[in-house]
Length: 176
Image (cartoon, rainbow, N blue to C red; front, side, top):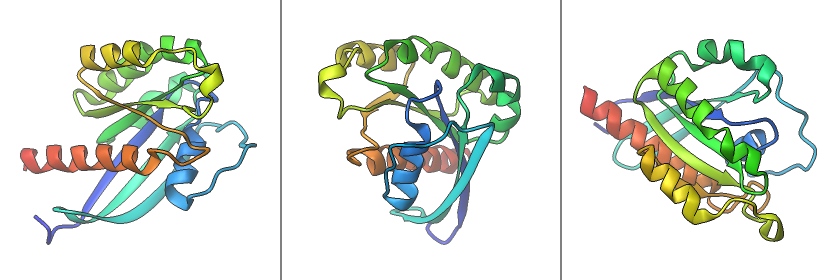
């Protein structure tokens, strides 16, 4: 397996302002800015990594705008995706309540691919509006793993991306 080069596509999905772009730039450049502008349509970045047990892997990461106005383009952007981080803001309950919409749109477009549920902004400890136990129940019900992250501090960001990437590679290896 290790002599093969993998190219995978993963998408970042979630409501506007949950921190998708912040997570992406923390993962790619290990940087955080407080003032990202809303993603209009899609932002596409790639990262070449070496994944233990699989070897060289190019990860194409599609950061989809979360605004309602981009909903019609969502299916097009999801074409060919191997998996997605489904992201919500732990301090904004309404972003958690919209998870079904994001999960369902991915499954409609791609079927049962790899999904990882991400509760972002865990650094906002005094403002948390979604209980971790509730999220764990949602993740279990939807057959997803769940991880808490903070794009601001960097906590668990690399871990979230790597977990999804490894799950995708494992899934692709089984399919071959």
